[in-house]
Length: 378
Ligand code: SF4
Image 1 (cartoon, helix red, strand yellow):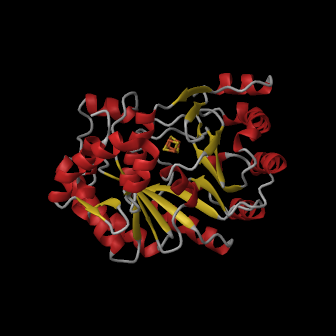
Image 2 (cartoon, rainbow, N blue to C red):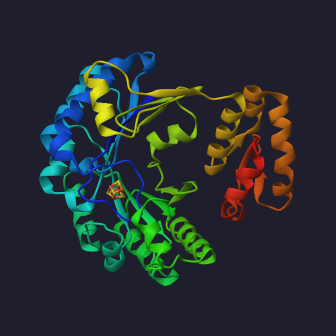
């Protein structure tokens, strides 16, 4: 099986915390961009080595900003190249304020069966401060529209540690999310990325960072509330009702090859990583003149070991020690076992009967440290 990711790098405005590659140039560049992505699909189809595409993911940026006519041209173009008959999960990222009845119906008619919405918070004053264009009420309305159009696999993204957020207000946001019963919830701790407006607000003393202990408490509450209401905690930042884990993202975590199309998109085939430029004009010009735009790097054995350990430990599947030894040899396996032991003794890591090593609930709270210890580099 194979997965395809398509990056749609257009937003209506920039959120103050975001460092993803996106631009405000949809009107001027959208149509050429779509043609460039289709051209890239044609040029790179062989990279899938004849594997059937099972998951398709349109991320961004804000894919829901693409006018329906362009979105439809893009999907039809990809369909001509890859077939897409075998796609089981077709996800589109959306902002709640774009989710109109027409948009939902358009998505359904193009085969979209999963929508991932950037909600971030249910506190309107915080949403306004961080530059989101929607309110909590619009989130509720968007979910209603998606469901009445027949899209019943909905994910929402939340962020904890936002400026102005308290443990109580976060708890309230999580409870509001739960009252909507989305099939999937992703929750990330806020990071201050250099170059963002949020970063400079902190530099100028205009925002105060939520202390780390409070962020940990927010995460602990999140895990407790979600697990207590039937969600499986299957990756550090991801929770799903039974049967609704993200198939596309799971393939990143278990090292399945994927093809990434579009500006700033990455691809991975098990040994080589390819990176498209995070530059709209450079990407469009290359592809429309019939050339690929990526640079590539071959991962060393130890880089691949690090990826395996890091991605594995983030999931509830953990790291399969038998497979680790088969794929990376005795030296890597000894390193893993030696570094794992103190964390096992401390109750932060546990060995399952089938030799998979999985973080415990306490271990998840210390995941960064444990993962660093088990990696080869450190
Ligand atoms: S809508 Fe998403 S991609 Fe665009 S600026 Fe906001 S967070 Fe970043």
